[in-house]
Length: 360
Image (tube, rainbow, N blue to C red; front, side, top):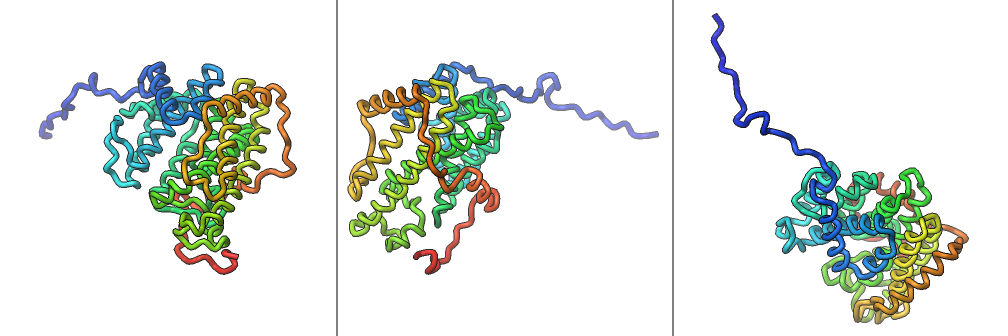
């Protein structure tokens, strides 16, 4: 006779044990997500906030939702989570980046994240078809910083620009309704992100140096006879200004390319994009014009200048005949992505000194 084995029973009734239902925005109301996202962009970026007001209602709200996630990722990666919904400020840099991946993954699956900015991403991703490949590309930029990575060559510089801005440009194009298979327009959106980040890097060289970061390629510095880690010293300022001017020249090339893509957008989207391009372009040009004094104070545009650039962008959007450059920028999205996929998630950082032929 077989022994009677008591049947195992769950501690909780199966009627109570239910998996979390997947819902865009983690179950939060869309209006609440939009309201908090608007607060985020108004606090974080006057330039983007001003340009976003020119969008139609749907695009404007979706751009706010995407911005909120970008801003939150930046704050968490830098350990500035004070006052937020999470408590990650005391975690190590690499751990914080992994937290970004986990939270972003949950958001894309429609799961609640306990952080409204990540739920905002889940909402806009569901509405616009933003895939994990793009969000991973953005988070990989934070991983580079967390691992102390610095660009050795111009190609490395453009890899970094893709992660932190180019991929965001592609996401914004999806927000504006550009189909996933419209490769050329997505490339032009990436070009706009490249331009914005080149302006940011040139403007923020001093601020980055203060926290031990340098995004000016080491090869550029070597060829300018600037000692490693000494680029902000007074005796190197003149040489450094030439390198920042080179960066702004690259910015102009990418802005020209980006305008070709903007021409294919709906009118209000085109106006907003061209306004942002003009405002950021103006910041870059101010950095170049200030020369070695560019880092004595933060370079910015005032409200009157922003208004003028938005008005000029209106005329440009109405005419809609962008200048077609004779050649496109050297570092395209496709070319940079090939390097990224070959190098892997965190690019190797050579520790050997530059060879003589690299520094020449």
